[in-house]
Image (cartoon, rainbow over all chains, first blue to last red; front, side, top):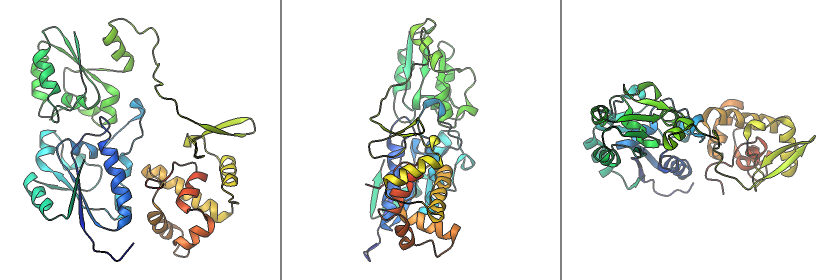
Length: 123
Length: 217
């Protein structure tokens, strides 16, 4: 792309998958925006941590299973994925339940990281 | 009375309101994001367990499976399928189970040897499982591409990629991945544009029976 300045983008995901379209829309925006070669990170907070819970089987609800796509993020050079510790705990989940490698951080630590961003997009 | 909750207990207060409203002997059916309340370790699980003393709690199995949560359902919750859902709503056996085709798309079709293959209005195959080499040849003809071994190599690569990641990759990612798999002489956009002049992602995906790449207009 252009020789423009590289900005720090953080996409914040706070909704469960399937029940609303936010999770899928966010993932698509991330993939599209990857073309612009910016410094991208993804944060999963609140119910957003459910997006990465291993083992989706969507046959019964007849929608596309978009979970394997998270594994393609690395191909798009997106490898900074942060997951909120408190959110995992409130949902009986652990780092081992996550479908891709993530860094688990406290809510406060994610907050500090947010402060360092140029752009924060929340879904 | 049957109460249906379809919102996550940690995102909205629907479950709280429901539990406060439902009368003893009633039933609660959890569907969509509502099913998270019925999973071990969820912060709302305690409330639900407590309510089970007075209410019968059901959860839709397909929604648990879709969320990867079917292996951690709270004790005491009864799982139901779609016809069980209908039974709960009507309180009688379903007269006509399995009528769940809600949507109709605008489609077109291509014909090969008497068999019809549905495509969307832009010519992309609707059901990628129907794809075969004959279909690919017809789709290629429509794109004015005559298929060579080099074309097949890219098309087959795309199908494998889709199979693994459920997306058609962007050109940049395709180029890089092809370079890794098939060699640097092929992993560049000039090579791919020579094979598919109107856009490798778009044309090769169409011929491979995949949906249009994400972000492609």
